[in-house]
Amino acid sequence: MAKKSKAPLPPGPVMVDVAGATLTKEEKRRLRHPLVGGVILFARNFESRKQLCALTRKIHRARGEPLLIAVDHEGGRVQRFRDDGFTPLPAMQDLGKAWDRDPLAAMRLATEAGYVLAAELRACGVDLSFTPVLDLDYGVSKVIGNRAFHRDPRVVAMLARALAQGLAQAGMAACGKHFPGHGFVGADSHHEIPVDPRPLERILKDDAAPYAWLGDAVLPAVMPAHVIYPKVDKQPAGFSRRWVQDILRGKLGYDGVVFSDDLTMEGATVAGDILARAQAALGAGCDMVLVCNRPDLADDLLQRLDVAHPPESVARIRRLMPRFAAPDWDALQAETRYQHARRIQSQIVPG
Image 1 (cartoon, rainbow, N blue to C red):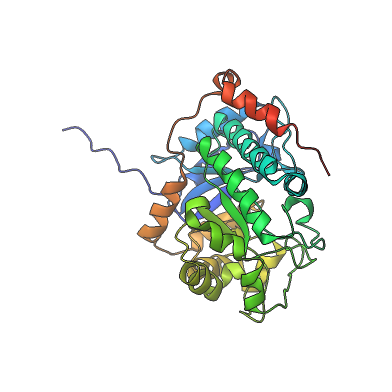
Image 2: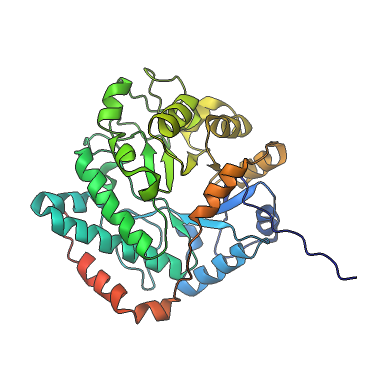
């Protein structure tokens, strides 16, 4: 009698990273853990396009069901892959400045930039970029800076919609961040614990407005901020049931994936050790938690976390996987649509 093949493991609630350009035996073992559901890549994982393609193939094949491969690849200073043919992408603030000159032209530029961004990543086996940034440009945030489109939430929503349209045309979902807004505070949540003293009504009227307008049809994923809004909850947004369940899912009717921001950031330490942070994020309603740059903490979490991934979370994460095959790099270069998009988005003039 032939052996029955094992059913593929569904995506788990933990996204991890890898150290270098190839997978080690230890990393392959980690990726097969049932609680792992995705991998986030960084600049250190890129040496060449050929190497990146080989790495993503091995990650996807690490278990029966392909793992979601993500990256922070926004444009401007946050663009992980820059060499060997990758197109330099504009900072989102440059799109906002283009809007001030000509709104319709700026929306076209945003769509073409989104298409180039997603098409190049997908040609190398990357499924998702954590973009666009929806934080408002108050001119004070150390970590946001020119990553933000604009100060006006209406402009942010329109440009984000245009960028997400370009992503979708290349088969990639959009992820809005950092809900409900990181732009008002100066502190960098990678190194500090930011506190935003404003009342809920003001935040919903301004910073969170793009999330309400766009919804999960345009933003299939959202990432909350490691920011404390004490007039709403004493916990950072990503650890707060008030923010994730009551406001984002309840008041705003959002039904996409909610990712935690990186649990190794300073802004996450208020919740306790790595297990307590993951439990807080998942308990608040996040579908997947990120553990970056600390494989020791990732292994600690995977060993101690005892949680059943809700079927609705599994279904949401599966919806983020691309729905059609992408051309390889050589085929992409031959596409008229891609070359046209590259020419159009190259017209963006840095501010």
